[in-house]
Length: 179
Figure 1: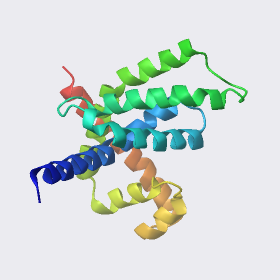
Figure 2: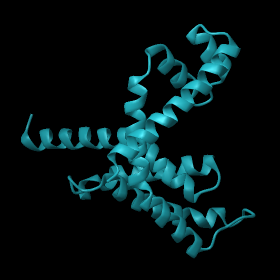
Figure 3: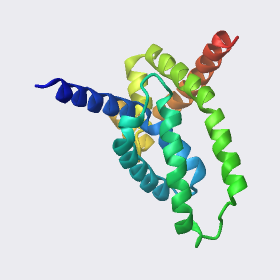
């Protein structure tokens, strides 16, 4: 394989890694700007295509999420004409304000996400499986209870206990890491 083919393959791997790692965060940003989930999902797809097309312009070592959210911002702006027919349309000042707030909250959300991941790893595997099963898209408590071998009542009690445990753990993690 030639050096340019190797470089291209490395660039594709890097893109896939970054998109896999940050897609939820990019979607969250889009969804703060777009009221309907289905519309946000459509814009995420459009944004992903633009990211693939423009990935050669991304500078490694810089903030991928900020770069991708800037692309998403322009996709949202372009989609606003489509949303103009809906009952609620924010003017550009409101949209700018929400986008700015979402961008500044990125670091805080990232810290919380990392703390939650650490706290989840500390849980007993059975408890972690119950939580992860419950919060899969479209999942219900009944399914999580069944898969974990718990009664429905026991699953509800365990989930309440685990939510409190995770909340306390994340709060403590953030308190000890915040200067």
